Length: 76
Image (tube, rainbow, N blue to C red; front, side):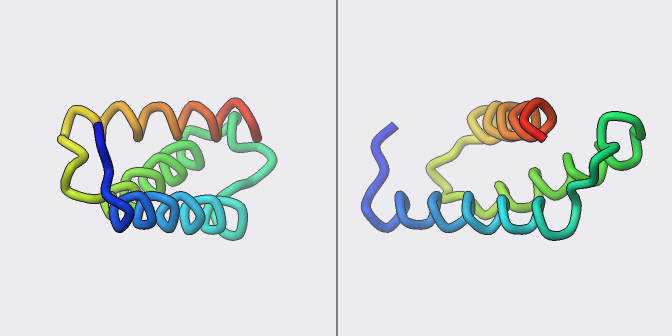
């Protein structure tokens, strides 16, 4: 997938904002223990990635949501 400079900048902005939001508001030490907490983090990821450029098809969007959620779950 080829992104324009504008789209690339938008992707970077979304990524930064998502990381800030997850760290500031949603991430808790026991996220693995409660399904409710995991669900909240999942919704935050999906909502934020919904701001990606329109070049991201629903299939790509879904894959990105899964990958980002898994990364957060495994890294924190």
